[in-house]
Amino acid sequence: MHGLIGKMTAVEGKRDALIAILLEGAKDMAGCMSYVVAKDPADATAIWITEVWDSPASHKASLTLPAVQDAIKKGKPLIARFDQSVVTEPVGGHGLNPVKGR
Image 1 (spheres, rainbow, N blue to C red):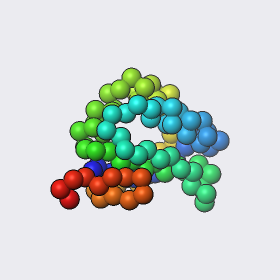
Image 2: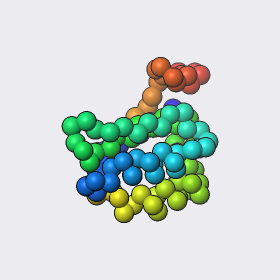
Image 3: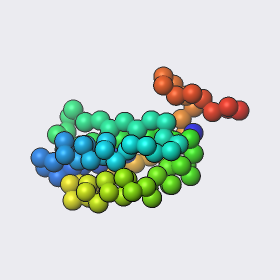
Image 4: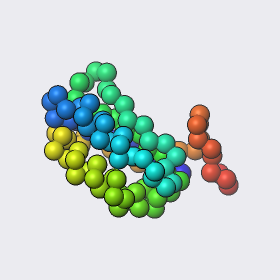
Protein backbone atom coordinates (compact mmCIF):
# COMPACT_ATOMS: atom_id res chain seq x y z
CA MET A 1 0.00 0.00 0.00
CA HIS A 2 0.99 3.61 -0.54
CA GLY A 3 0.00 6.39 1.84
CA LEU A 4 0.12 10.16 1.85
CA ILE A 5 -0.60 12.60 4.65
CA GLY A 6 -0.60 16.27 3.82
CA LYS A 7 -1.56 19.57 5.32
CA MET A 8 -2.65 22.58 3.31
CA THR A 9 -3.74 26.04 4.31
CA ALA A 10 -6.79 27.58 2.69
CA VAL A 11 -7.21 31.24 1.91
CA GLU A 12 -8.87 32.93 4.91
CA GLY A 13 -12.59 32.14 4.94
CA LYS A 14 -12.36 29.59 2.10
CA ARG A 15 -11.63 26.35 3.98
CA ASP A 16 -15.14 24.90 3.67
CA ALA A 17 -15.31 25.72 -0.04
CA LEU A 18 -11.92 24.08 -0.61
CA ILE A 19 -12.97 20.99 1.35
CA ALA A 20 -16.09 20.67 -0.81
CA ILE A 21 -13.96 20.83 -3.97
CA LEU A 22 -11.50 18.24 -2.64
CA LEU A 23 -14.28 15.83 -1.72
CA GLU A 24 -16.09 16.26 -5.02
CA GLY A 25 -12.91 15.61 -6.99
CA ALA A 26 -12.12 12.46 -5.02
CA LYS A 27 -14.92 10.31 -6.42
CA ASP A 28 -14.28 7.15 -8.44
CA MET A 29 -10.49 7.02 -8.17
CA ALA A 30 -9.28 3.53 -9.10
CA GLY A 31 -6.92 2.10 -6.51
CA CYS A 32 -7.93 4.58 -3.80
CA MET A 33 -8.61 2.67 -0.59
CA SER A 34 -9.14 5.70 1.63
CA TYR A 35 -9.33 9.46 1.13
CA VAL A 36 -10.08 11.48 4.25
CA VAL A 37 -10.27 15.27 4.39
CA ALA A 38 -10.26 16.75 7.90
CA LYS A 39 -10.50 20.20 9.43
CA ASP A 40 -7.75 21.14 11.86
CA PRO A 41 -9.63 22.17 15.03
CA ALA A 42 -6.70 24.35 16.15
CA ASP A 43 -6.43 26.34 12.89
CA ALA A 44 -9.48 27.70 11.03
CA THR A 45 -7.61 27.65 7.70
CA ALA A 46 -5.84 24.26 7.89
CA ILE A 47 -6.90 21.03 6.18
CA TRP A 48 -5.36 17.58 6.61
CA ILE A 49 -5.69 15.00 3.84
CA THR A 50 -4.94 11.33 4.49
CA GLU A 51 -4.84 8.97 1.53
CA VAL A 52 -4.26 5.24 1.11
CA TRP A 53 -3.69 3.77 -2.33
CA ASP A 54 -3.05 0.25 -3.53
CA SER A 55 0.14 1.53 -5.23
CA PRO A 56 2.06 4.69 -6.07
CA ALA A 57 1.08 4.14 -9.72
CA SER A 58 -2.64 4.34 -8.87
CA HIS A 59 -2.09 7.63 -7.06
CA LYS A 60 -0.13 9.03 -10.00
CA ALA A 61 -2.82 7.90 -12.46
CA SER A 62 -5.54 9.59 -10.38
CA LEU A 63 -3.95 12.96 -11.04
CA THR A 64 -4.86 12.64 -14.72
CA LEU A 65 -8.59 11.98 -14.12
CA PRO A 66 -10.91 14.74 -15.41
CA ALA A 67 -12.63 15.11 -12.01
CA VAL A 68 -9.27 15.48 -10.25
CA GLN A 69 -7.98 17.93 -12.86
CA ASP A 70 -11.18 19.97 -12.45
CA ALA A 71 -10.78 19.96 -8.65
CA ILE A 72 -7.18 21.16 -8.99
CA LYS A 73 -8.27 23.98 -11.30
CA LYS A 74 -11.13 25.07 -9.01
CA GLY A 75 -9.22 24.58 -5.76
CA LYS A 76 -5.92 26.26 -6.65
CA PRO A 77 -7.16 29.84 -6.06
CA LEU A 78 -8.44 28.81 -2.60
CA ILE A 79 -5.09 27.39 -1.42
CA ALA A 80 -2.84 29.80 0.46
CA ARG A 81 -0.01 27.25 0.73
CA PHE A 82 0.92 23.61 0.98
CA ASP A 83 2.43 22.77 4.34
CA GLN A 84 3.62 19.40 5.57
CA SER A 85 3.53 16.31 3.38
CA VAL A 86 4.76 12.80 4.06
CA VAL A 87 4.68 9.48 2.24
CA THR A 88 3.80 6.46 4.36
CA GLU A 89 3.52 2.71 3.87
CA PRO A 90 0.20 1.64 5.41
CA VAL A 91 0.10 -1.96 6.61
CA GLY A 92 -3.56 -2.21 7.62
CA GLY A 93 -5.99 -0.95 10.19
CA HIS A 94 -9.69 -0.43 10.63
CA GLY A 95 -11.24 -0.22 7.18
CA LEU A 96 -8.12 -1.36 5.33
CA ASN A 97 -7.29 -4.85 4.20
CA PRO A 98 -3.58 -5.67 4.45
CA VAL A 99 -1.76 -6.39 1.21
CA LYS A 100 -1.14 -10.11 0.81
CA GLY A 101 2.45 -11.19 1.27
CA ARG A 102 3.26 -8.63 3.98
